[in-house]
Amino acid sequence: MSLVGVGGQGVLLAAAVLAQAALLDGLDVKASEVKGMAQRGGSVLSTVRFGAAVFSPVATHVEVVIAMELLEGRRAVPLLVSGGALVCATTRISPGCVLRREAEYPEDIAAAAAKRRVRLLEVDAERLAARVGTVRAANTVLLGVASAVLPFTDAAWNGALQAVLPSKIVEINRRAFQLGRDAVPATEVRK
Image (cartoon, rainbow, N blue to C red; front, side, top):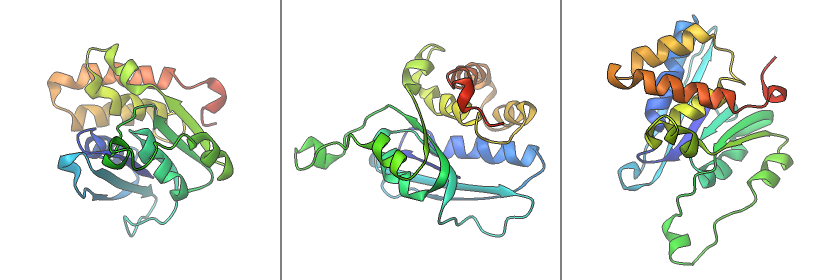
């Protein structure tokens, strides 16, 4: 699976939580990241592969993408296999070319997902995170949404949050995770 966003959105932290959840459920895990100009708001991509035996963090196609920003989610649609899931925040961070009016912000994420036969789970992660007191927990809201389509147990998710996050923010992030999970319609939950 892949996680995408821009620098400062907590992509790498979310990937660490996800990898820890897989480990706590007894799976082999390999992870990689591409940060580019992340410190200046550039694209960030992290790939986390898990299973009985994983030999490389590299994946050409994935079953799930968590996108912390709408344009990055749109860019990640080609990474998904048919039948995959795109968990995408509605957050918009316009790149320079859009700010300079050289290009328009793409509005076709739903069409792109449908064309690829990908389930799109869009959520206003920042709004939900604000309900727990900080929009910085938007990444954890998205993990909660993704938990509906990922195979990890509740114990693994809780243990991963506890293991990866500083103790002073664990409870806020647990609440953010639950808000994300509760935002997923029952029809979208993995069986």
